[in-house]
Length: 410
Ligand SMILES: *Cc1c(COP(=O)(O)O)cnc(C)c1O
Image 1 (cartoon, protein in one colour):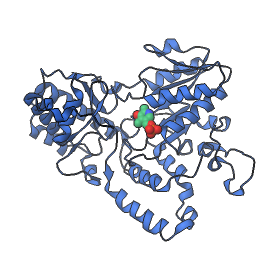
Image 2: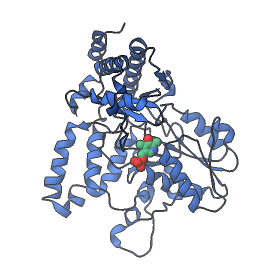
Image 3: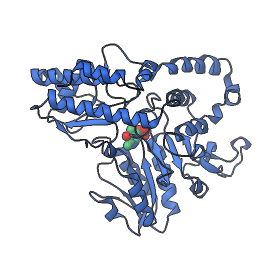
Image 4: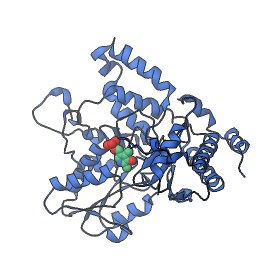
């Protein structure tokens, strides 16, 4: 049996344990949803106060130059680059994941215009599928977006313009082999676009090492940038000047403040900007990203794996015989940083957990999902959360009517 003291011993030996104190974590809550909305860093509160009161309130318009608001997309992009194995000038913070997907799908498919297939897989995150479909509809008539189940390598062919995949699956947590799939796509002359929303800040990513062409990722999950934080995009250095964003807004112009009538894209990554950046949100994201400055991504990966093992082992001991079915692979090399179980009554159980302060989430049709965020999840949190889940399953309290009520956001 794994005891609470065993979990505490793991915390005592954890080199990242000190990071937890840098987050606001409310009393009585075991927060296991940082893969959906990252927790609030304490530093963000002071930084946002400064942005609002001094930079906006007093410095006013002078802040664009004086506080380098104008350089925020590139500056924060460069900080994220370190977390994903990219060069500083290959990443920029802008727009949402959905909008960035749209821009890059169109740009890549136009570059590879003698080919007509955008290859992805069924069950990819909905916005990835919807934007691929929407983008394909705006391109030439013959462009199709194919959702290949099973072996993606088999589906790659001389007609594939772009292979677009999510690195870590949002439901199952399964991780694709980025190196292998990128290599296979290149062999067929296809470009690659990886969605890193469930990878960045949670597991090591090496875009340059894998020779990835394009990528996007989310700011409000493991990067702790706040609700609706701007997203980032990556374009391989030597492709940047060959690609054109279909959203040719003035911030992506080579000289926005010359106010010319004709559009000339900026050199490099800046051409993927569109409109004025949302500075409050950008700087909240920067506070979140700055917490990674002193942290080694390998230490994060090791802790994520250890949190997972404790969770899975403890569920086996404490919650056996209650229809919980682990759907995430146990091998750390093949998964991200959340753990998912299917259960026919997943929704009411997730609601009963929340009532007891254990905040995970539910993904239709039947998945209980728990995010393991190495910067602030403790081993004790995991032990206690499983204990509460065991009590809920044993007592059957989740069968009470109030837990059946559906919410708008799950
Ligand atoms: C969270 C997530 C998104 C979010 O897209 P938004 O445009 O920020 O709403 C996109 N793709 C994946 C794979 C995600 O996990």
